[in-house]
Image (cartoon, rainbow, N blue to C red; front, side, top):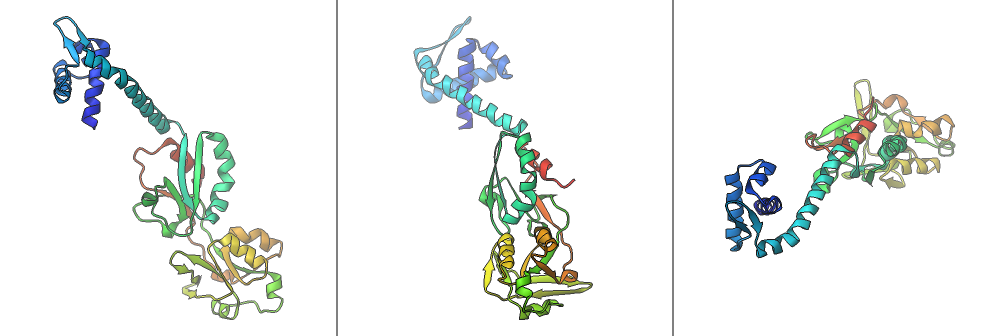
Length: 293
């Protein structure tokens, strides 16, 4: 197909210039190479497309008929290529991004207004998913994920500082229950489970050199920390969410945080994508907007 397009484009330019010499200069090739290309096209079509004399070149009737449909098609291809190049140089077009709902709330939304005002021709098509995603298989331009879940062959750019998880419960829940002092005390509490693609998340704790994982139990398992918080506010049980997400509720005493000394920091969210080669201008702009300064 590529060779056919090259041959057709060469024929169209020779017909337009009515000269192999001028067409060769325009294309940056030798006159003999151009003549060979056009002869090859004529042989394959078994048609003479150009009438040649020592002084002039002109389309034959068959050549003129071909040009009638060929010229608009080549112009459309040229416009499409120019549009593609403009996307490379100017932030525009649609970016497909995958992330969790928590990442949307904590990373994207706080910076989205400024980004949209700076780049009005870029559309972010966001898909929310819990857990790791294969960007290439899912045809995504980029994703935002906790650092430890990003594949090793991805380019990763930090978009948040280190994060901590917080175990919280409502005053209503604790009205008739004791405050857990150690992770194992969670076995005596109703807990709101967080579901990841591999199954319910085992709550992880660490203090000093001691690390503990607890398989919690309770009346609800859900796949989004924002919904975990809402359930905790309603008194369903103890929930696990990002410290930043619950800070305001804790400050207003709508939630009580427990086991804080067992919650170490861990690498936060990163924006990740497959390669820097031929990166669209829109993706470069989004990386700059979200990158942690």
